[in-house]
Length: 122
Length: 103
Image (cartoon, rainbow over all chains, first blue to last red; front, side, top):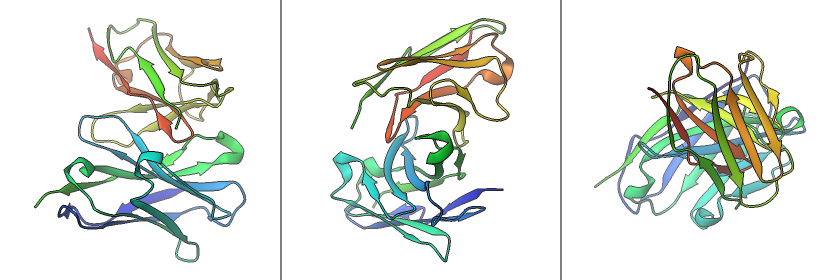
């Protein structure tokens, strides 16, 4: 059974760096075809994919945010970490991580974490 | 990044209605389209991938079709559990969402 769980601060001050951790079980990020994504959702708004990392360490970022984002994996710890620099109020959102089995669903995320709400405020 | 235009943004319908949601990518994506259902306070749930493949456990009243730059998600007979927000997605782009409300 695949599970993912997000963790990180609930409150961050403007201009600080946000670090979020996705801890997963039931799969390995060293298995060919597997990826993990970070996706966020501001209150009342649509989903937005921020970054993806694949089993071969290929990384992709949302074009408009790529200068502020870093994604990396710790395979033995079964974790994927996302950092976002210089946060502002517009980064207030629920942040999800999701499993991407490219060999079966293509680009679709089949299992999601429960999400973690992050508020950016002074 | 590809832009995904989803319509309508809100849809009012009754139990038993046939409902169709449309998604138009800004460029051709072959059949690499997925659809999700999201209820308030919950993570999205994958309904469909590769445009028309039903995810395991999803009721057969949901169906998907399309290719290239036009895709649809259809609910053949709306059930009370189906009132939610639906999103289309391709790679790292999501549509703006369609909220299906009770009429």
